[in-house]
Length: 117
Length: 208
Image 1 (cartoon, rainbow over the protein chains, first blue to last red):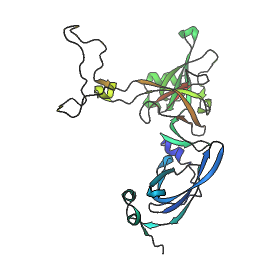
Image 2 (image 1 turned 90 degrees about the horizontal axis):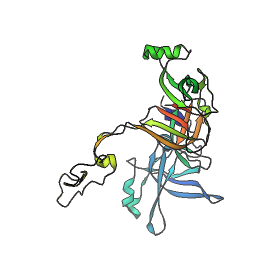
Image 3 (image 1 turned 45 degrees about the horizontal axis):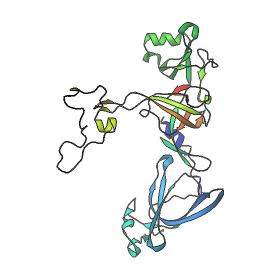
Image 4 (image 1 turned 180 degrees about the horizontal axis):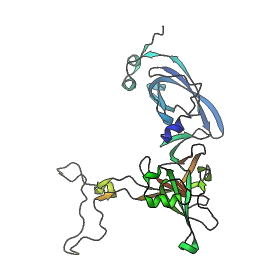
């Protein structure tokens, strides 16, 4: 059997991370270690990419910071530094990678909400 | 390669190696062979896969048929017996190891890939110069090309040692070893794992 696969099968999904999809607006609670202090930082934004493959699985969250500067952060899905992820809103999107949001600002960068019946 | 997380949550790039079970198939002694070494065998195969000579070499010592045989030098204080089984547990997390493998063959490679030459310019009226070696020597003096001039040719497929890699994970159950960083050779290739020469520690053996 593939050795890497056999090792990756042991990965335990973080119970505080729900199944995310591109277009979801999420609050990511990440543990930040500064010197000897530890705190939780919340990063809120839209999931523009989810890469689910093996131990290197990750997802990218984009948010518009002060002065309209777009900030993207990629989190390793299996990182023990991720405290939890909350889904705030789910949107209807038609592609897997929402890179087109990078070229848009303001009203153009909105996504239609997904109707959950 | 894959990655694992340490206690602090840092992602560590690792290569997973199937290390063992290996068998001591022959012991070379100072008296008989002039140096001390062991021959280790790895990967059980059907006896039909081996030549009669190989089969006899192993079955006479009641060792199963093994695909690969490699020799490892022994230190003065190390002593192993023929037939002894060696498992990954000779390694511990934190040990430093050297890994010997055969690098991936690159075929007939040009001078840019093989020796890191810069090549020529792409534009400004150039033709056929992008990956050219440039001048390979002078004119009438010396009237020949120096020996050792680096040129295109076969690249890769040679024995390479990656030194001083840290053991990051030992899985005794499945005989898996994970070392930090990359290792010579293609996926599934045979490598030899030895104790690092440039730091001090114990134990040695091959794996795949």
